[in-house]
Amino acid sequence: MFRLGLTCYWPLGTVILALCESAAGSQLSSEKTWVWGPGLRAEVVLPARYFYIQAVDTEGKRFTVSPGENAFQVKITAPEEQFTRVGVQILDRKDGSFIVRYRMYASYKNLRIEVQTLGVHVAKSPYSLKGPVYHENCDCPQEDGNAWLEEMSCPPSILQIQRDLAHFPTVDPDKIAKEIPQRFGQRQSLCHYTIKDNKVYIKTHGEHVGFRIFMDAILLSLTRKVKMPDVEFFVNLGDWPLEKKKSSQDIHPIFSWCGSNDSKDIVMPTYDLTDSVLETMGRVSLDMMSVQANTGPPWEEKNATAIWRGRDSRKERLELVKMSRKYPEIIDAAFTNFFFFKHDESLYGPIVKHISFFDFFKAKNIAKAGQEFARNNLMGDHIFCYYFKLFQEYAKLQVTEPKVRDGMEKVEQPDDDLFPCSCHRKKVKEEL
Image 1 (cartoon, rainbow, N blue to C red):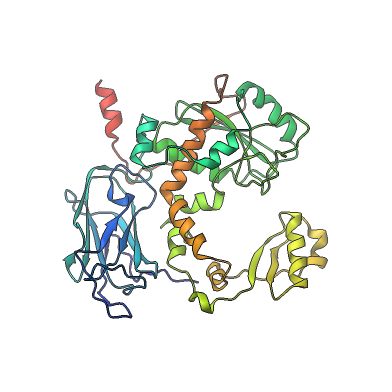
Image 2: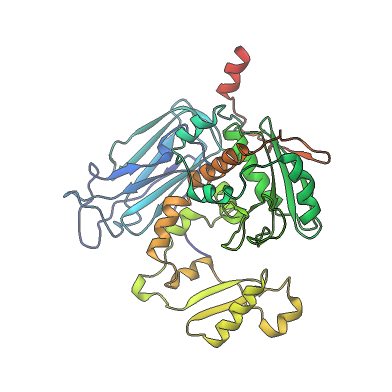
């Protein structure tokens, strides 16, 4: 088990904490401390909204160590409502900064966010979010995709997307609908998707297609937030890319959660990262925010040995375990399960128990540069920007109209009978 940098989580959206000074004795300044982030803007709809606090002392210097996990108090309320169904967590990143995240379980006309230290408002607190402020399950897409990108502060272009799509000057949905299932459908696990009029349709190919739930979930979440372009594409559900870089056949556009320098698959954020974004403060407890609050011991006390645990989903992993046995002082690698190479278990076993995710942070292979990359590229808004931008750019390559093909079924939005929302965009459309 692990513990978040938080001692209480109340449904009324209040976390009550107390002030602590840094180890050096610097006094925290409520006026000079910074507060910023997408969670302070009503139009940025995320499963769990978030913003940052950077502790600053009375001399205007940033704290570089934690001023204490009990440094701030955050309260979120809906002024027009008697009760506010918002869960709040404060995560101490141990470097003088904090992540405040909150998950809304209903939509509100307005929200008020108070950030205080010892009862004194911090920075420009209180912050007013002029609504409507929608929760994750509210089906209220922004009709203008470019306007949504601007509201989300998405970058105008993403280099990885440009590189991946450069292999495909044009895409013919009619052509790939026939050829990709013929080429990969029997041996691999694929999903054939069409998004038409902002509705999601799917047909699966292969035996092991359970991981479609992760792709279904992000597509449904996107279509609740923004009107997606009409687009038709295939998703590889496997653990390895399919389209070889030096293939003798005509290459096909295949979306994958993995890629390499030797393949031409169109990469997406991994299914587990995507799932953690969608389920933050829900059923998933490991995500890019909670990870930042559990960085392990100080760098000088970390273990220099590289650590790896996992299943046998690729032959190269067998070689890694073999290498670990030869150089145990450098690599600690072992399998936690055998599925694909059960006949080799006697050679590469025995199976070892899973270890806590945060035990990996005891090793130096988690570098400061990696932490900064995660903070700047792998937060929830970054993931949504990447997916939408990817499908937007891919849609421009299509030379025939995407179609809902024979055998496709509609992927339904989840029911939200408990806290339904009233979409202001739909009301305006109906009145017109």
